[in-house]
Length: 68
Image (cartoon, rainbow, N blue to C red):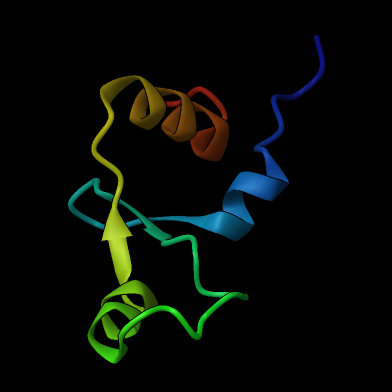
């Protein structure tokens, strides 16, 4: 059986912290920015934690190649 490979697109988009959190960039920062307030734009530029349980489980599997 061949080796399990990590999902490269997920590795570029999601970062796993030492405590096990999944950090990702928020969407909505690329275009149509004139209608958004500076406060909202500041908040969008920060990384956010992914909290959905099913997404976290699948993303960890994709990043760690099925290892716990």
